[in-house]
Image (cartoon, rainbow, N blue to C red; front, side):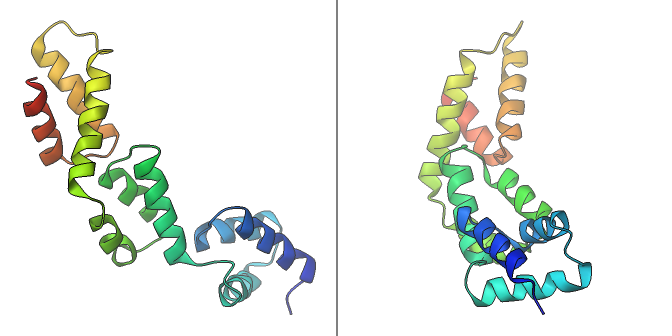
Length: 151
């Protein structure tokens, strides 16, 4: 039997922003819901469509790439840390327009180039590579960007 007040709190939690099972289970533990009942709450939230992992994954990818300018590697790592399987998001990551993906990496690199303080061209190149890797871009994309910038 689910506690109605706790269930309503979880519904509100899921309405506020898209959530995944991992986020909801953490909230359940914060609300002191017994571990053996957490699965029941999650199941009920999914039945009533407050919780939908596919919707969450789409939203996550769109916000991280579109607003935060993350690369695919960083998005993959973040989703994996939330317990989401590779098979659930692989096709959604492939739907990102490759021209847009490259253009984003190029724009970030151009912006960063002006702020890098380096002693040599090699040092500048290395710092720019490290920056793009920290944003989650793959080495093939980074190579194309560096070639385009002539760094």
